[in-house]
Amino acid sequence: MTQETSKLKVFREAEVRNNKDKSTLLIIHDNVYDVTKFLEEHPGGEEVLLEQAGKDATESFEDVGHSTDARELMSEYLIGELHESDKKGSTIKTNTSINAPDSDSGSGWTGWLLPLGVALAAAFLYRYFMSQSS
Image 1 (cartoon, rainbow, N blue to C red):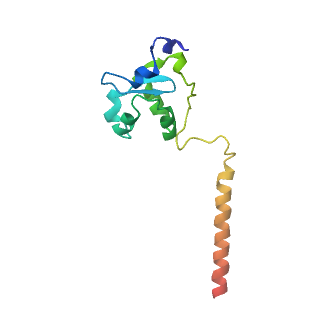
Image 2 (tube, one colour):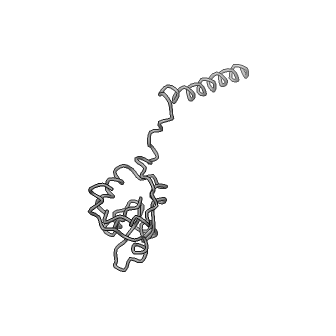
Image 3 (cartoon, rainbow, N blue to C red):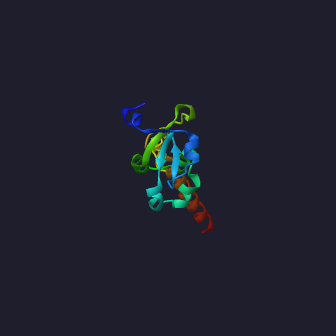
């Protein structure tokens, strides 16, 4: 547990699920966030957050592939963490955006070699068929 998280309020999962005040609480990666003030600003619309209110929204959050900026913005809404017995131990992904670099993609030349080969083959086939029809 980091020094920052040791100062946070500890919530039980049932406490988040049965939240009695008008706050919109979410659980993401075993941390509790109050996103009430963020509802109108959320790029996906407030309905997305309200649908996950009181639940563990980790899977939904990760499935969307939030940017690094979105992940940094989350710290503004962090109000606590789950009690040790309620934690699921999910790991935080560092970059899941659609344009995230793929470490298995190899070197840069392989990214253009195949399309170049296909383009050249198409050009040769076109010229061959055009010369046959003349």
